[in-house]
Image (tube, rainbow, N blue to C red):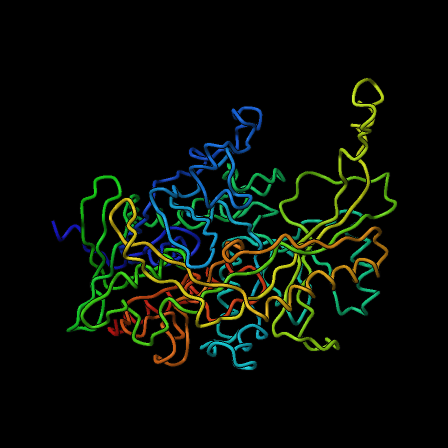
Length: 561
């Protein structure tokens, strides 16, 4: 019956953004339904962390059959036996590629909050002002001051560990105690600071792994099996952090296997009145109605929902009046960097399997950078110092006691870094509906058409050379560089396609993440990003979501929605 399908709020998607939306809406008293297209994954019960590598038939690796079944996932590291069920069934949910795009998706409750890399950084004024200053894309409708309190709010609940490093390029946050440098990292960090007069830094990576008990969760146990699901709740996920308080309110209905096919738009009120779903198990269609809708289906799927909500008002979909829906797609380009050997420290070793490492904040095209660059924006690095266990192996002695002794030696210390660079918001980098190809449920699929351009290619040269120079200058030996090549999507940081802006003629959303064309629809995940920065974006989604919910509820109370 229709009356059972009426709520105060609808949340589409249950990943990082959707979980936050559900928590905030329900805690503010709104009866909310969270619609997730995939299966339910229960905290602890459905995780894989208790299973040891030798218990898997192929020791956690990949098989020829898996490669056949997952032609996209096999392009990079995610294809493995251990958490295969956390990755999307590619045969059921295909997409098409005008240009190669590696789309690694998680269709289940929690989404990629169960598999994410957990690095958590704030955007600063450097990022929010970039488009305006160098003329790429459109100006962000917000500045750091607008979102700073919401970063704090998100950090305090999610539990982000890190140091307050006092760097202009990377704003500090409200952190739990940071994880510790190992002895080599500490030494190299001091050398670097001295060498560059305090202008370059190795800092401890800020991560959504808690270092002390928090909100009923147990601190990180240094297992580094995060993407299998954490039985301790040691890192932020929907299941560990945002779903429990949402459920506790009694205001949340969670409905898995619910594929939202469109947002139902009412021309008379110029607002959305609800959504249509297809039940992924029964193929039956249902409608749900609400005063406010939060679209948090992950960047490109959120835009898919908007596009598939085409009406006689907007042929290109809800939010398409500017002509920007589907455009300005972004990611972070990476898979290159440098490393080398570190002499000495042979009497020292590392502790546990720390789930984070060193971070090198951006130092190019910032105040104090004296080098002339032939590109705009910048990059940071993630890496670590480590001691290899097996480098004592002697090929000629692969049997016997001497070989066993050699295998027990830890080997030499080394250090390695991977760079992550910003991709500019090019209008021509886009996604669109491919109506010639249908998924398992007869729905049109997305087509990907994007590439990195001259600015990114020029940046990539610096990304290897700068780290090589830094490592050599602080005494690292046998320094090497590498570039494994990059294809769009590999960063798993897809952003844009429904960007925020100041003008409804050039953007899809306003400064409160409202769709210009339907003010009771909010998009708060990666789709909303106006530029990409060079830091991991998930913390920004959390902050934007909490901020948008606060605004939406306030507007509801005023009768404006």
